[in-house]
Image (cartoon, rainbow, N blue to C red; front, side, top):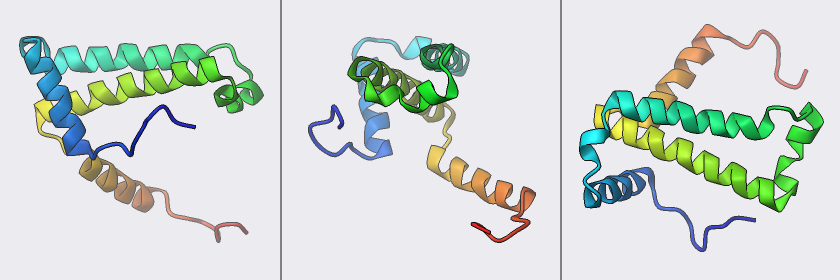
Length: 117
C-alpha cells in the first residue's frame, strides 16, 4: 500500500516542484553541488540506519511493519529529493545517466551462462 493518493508526477515535474519549493524559501544559495551531495549522503545514511542491525531475514520483512515502512518511504523520498536537486543543479539527466550506466555494465559484465540455467 502506498501513501500517495494518485500516481506520482514524472521526474521533470518533481524536479520543478523541488526547485519551486527551494525558491519560495530562498534556499537556492545553499543548494550547491557540495551541499546537496552532502545532504544526499546524510539521508542515505538515515536509510541505512533503519537496516543497520537487522538480520537479512528481518530486512526482507521491513515493509511488513507499518511504522518502519513509513520511515523507509520517508528516507527514500529524502534521498531521491536530494539526488534530483543535485542532478538539476549540475544539469544531469538521471534517467539517461542510469540507462548509460546499465549499458556499460552489460558490456563490462557479460552473461556467462543462460539466465535461469
